[in-house]
Each structure stands twice: as structure tokens, then as C-alpha cells.
Length: 160
Length: 295
Ligand SMILES: Cc1cc2nc3c(=O)[nH]c(=O)nc-3n(C[C@H](O)[C@H](O)[C@H](O)COP(=O)(O)OP(=O)(O)OC[C@H]3O[C@@H](n4cnc5c(N)ncnc54)[C@H](O)[C@@H]3O)c2cc1C
Ligand code: FES
Ligand code: FES
Image (cartoon, helix red, strand yellow):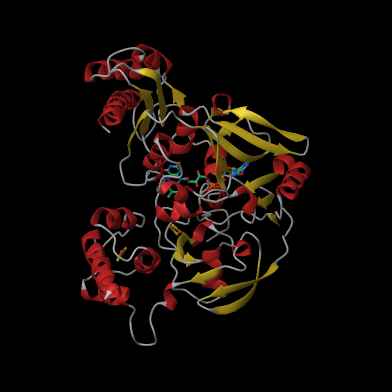
């Protein structure tokens, strides 16, 4: 197979433009990590199942391993690096800290972005709804109860 | 380590050329030009995993995400017209009044998880034709009609002739699915949808969608569609016939569910044996019928 040429793409990530040269086959997740240097976005399965790569595209949680960077010009992309304000943690991050919402932390960026995208549009979710949304992502060590607890606390804080 | 001795699992797609379609006409031109070499990229929620595993290695991708002209939901008399690029998430709330909207909403919540539903499209789901895809089962239940565009024009295909086998449809490589039309159910139609999967959001091991009328306590226009049990979505024709004219009681529902379980050609795989799937069909069909009458 012939070497495909790279194309120039400008991505708007966390309010900053990133000009990168990538092959069309470069996923958004790999581009964020390797070309933009934003390694907060993690890769677990690379086929849409685990949710570790979840970021916000135009405000909505999506799997960054299932999009190509060439598709994302003009989108408003937000990654976990955007949550904290300097040393001040975002309410969702603080809630994970307070409630032991993470253990190894591998799944955490995905859960944080999933929760951020969801709570911004649904500030007061019911218990069943929240469980259904959080079932989108996998955690292999903390267990889901503390993650649920964290997101519930974050919702309260963000509503206040 | 010597090359070839140990090959790490490849989780990156093979190289491809990328075309961003600016119109349906342009997309179709590309498909005509590249034929079997090309794949349409819709939500990417099935195609990109397959590419990351290198189960799919298209040389050309034609991205139809920019096509707002395929992102519409319209009511046209007794028909609901769904543009191919409408995302799954649009159906989480009823898109039309009455049983059709309710049924779509019941099914929508079972399609993967929220981030999958935000990207994945109605048209992509039908074109992909996973035997356990909710939208394929609904399309078959409602006798949907699908419209395509191709370099030679386009055609209409009934859902009954669209699904051929696993991941295989009547679509030709140069054909773009553009619209799905659902004939709306009569306003007094009762609907039910039940499925079983091991974890929330997984593809179901089996599912049953039903619709029928029961104005005078007797079943009329019974429809039962099943997914996840065979190489494509199926209608349980014998069970439908057996239900017709019967009193809408648990006893009739149980009898129809038994017939559905026996009439299908169930498949077994690592997720469940054929016998287990038959048991699921029996239980899910009965529950869907009961759910419909209780609502
Ligand atoms: C973790 C996970 C869980 C999932 N769970 C479920 C589930 O429970 N139920 C379910 O139904 N689905 C599930 N899916 C799949 C999801 O619904 C996909 O969105 C859907 O199967 C394909 O739609 P898409 O728009 O993403 O299509 P794509 O992935 O872009 O395309 C799929 C195929 O269809 C072709 N295609 C797409 N659009 C067109 C068109 N307009 N004309 C011609 N060809 C076209 C493509 O070329 C490709 O071959 C899951 C996916 C993931 C990653
Ligand atoms: S890495 Fe994207 S979902 Fe697992
Ligand atoms: S904290 Fe370790 S995987 Fe979730």
C-alpha cells in the first residue's frame, strides 16, 4: 500500500488552536495525545467499549478513539486538561477526590468528561438516569459506587 | 525481538484516502468512482472499531457527516421520514406522537451507551445490519422503506428485502442510503419492546418488538420482530398469524411466544447456545406482548 500523504488540520482544543500534520487514519485520540501533547485523554480498548478516551466535541461526550482528526476541524473540543482552573479543581474532580472516585486513575479522565458533558446539559439527573449514563464507561478497580457518589456530589455543587 | 516473531496486536487502521462529501451528489460520485474500495463513514461507531481491528481496510473513506441535508425528521401524512444521518440520540424522546414515537424511544435507550448514541446514525445502523441492532428490528417490524442514491439514480427497498445476512444488505457498494420511511402505526396500536443483554449497553443476545391492536379485546394486525437470534432480524410470521383474532390475554400471549420460539432458526455462538436463544425469544416475546397490553 502506498504511503498516504499527511494533511494539515487545525483543531480547536480547550479554546486553543493546534495545527497538526496527520495521516487521515490518525484517530482523534492519538492526535490529541501524540500531536497535541495532551496525554490526559487515555486509550483503553480503541474500539469504543471502555470510554477511557471520552472527550467533549461541541459539548457532547464522544469516543475520541472512534473519530479521525481530519473530521474534527471546526469542532469545539474539550479534554480533561480543560477542567481545572490552575490549581483549583473542577467540582467534578474535587468530588472524585472527596469520595474516593478513583484508584489507579486510568479510567478517570473518561468518567470526568462523560460527567462534565452530561451534567452541563442535565444539571439535576435522576438516580436511574445517572446510572444509565455512567454505565457508558468501564472502571476496573475503584468500583462504580464511589464514582456514582462523586458525580452525585458534583451535580449538587454545580447546581448551587 | 525479531520482527515477525512477535506481532503486537494492531489497533490502528490501515491507511486510506479521505474525502469529505459536501453534498449527496458528491458522495455518490465518489462511491461510483471507487466502488468496492470505498466505504461510507457515518457515525463511525461500527466502522471505526472494525478498522482499528483491521477487520475492515477500506482504501477510501467518504465522510458524510457534513451532510446536514441527511439530518432531518419529517412527518409526511402517515409516514415518518428519517434522514440517514439522524443520530440515535434524537430518538431518546418521542419524535412523533403516538405509538411509533413511543416504540422508537423504548428501543433507543438500548442502543449502546450515550456517547455511542451521540455519534451513531439511524442510517448507519441499518446499512451495517448487525442482526442484534435495535433499528434493524424496528425497521422490519414497521415495514420500513429505504431510499438510496447511486450514480445511476437510486431506488426504494422494502425492509423485508434489505437485510440479507450478518453485516450484509441489499446495498450495492456505490449506493448511499439516504432516507428511511416508517409507516406510522394507527394511534390505538399497542407496542412493546424487550431485550436481554449481559451488561447495560451491550448488543443484546435477543430482543423482541411487538405491535398490535386490541379494540374489542381481540388482537388485530399483530406484528412480532426478533433480533439477535439469527443472521438477520426476523419476523415471527407464524406467531403473528396465531395471535390474530385471539383474545388479548396472557394465555394467547404465552401460546404465541411458544410458537415464535419454535419457528425461528436460532443460532448459537460463544455468547449463548441456540437453545438458550430460543428460551430468550419465548420469554421476551411474552413480556413484550404483556408490556404492550399493560401500557
Ligand atoms: C460500545 C458500542 C456498543 C454498541 N452497542 C450497540 C447496540 O446495543 N445496538 C446497536 O444497534 N448498535 C450498537 N452499536 C453500534 C452503533 O449503533 C453504530 O452507530 C451503528 O451500528 C452504525 O452506525 P454509524 O452511523 O456509526 O455507522 P458507521 O460505523 O459509520 O458505518 C457502519 C457501516 O454502514 C455503512 N454506512 C453507514 N452509513 C451509510 C449510508 N448512509 N449509506 C450506505 N452505507 C452506510 C458504512 O460504510 C459501514 O460499512 C454499538 C457500538 C459501540 C462502539
Ligand atoms: S479507548 Fe476509546 S472507548 Fe476504549
Ligand atoms: S480507577 Fe482504575 S480503572 Fe478506574
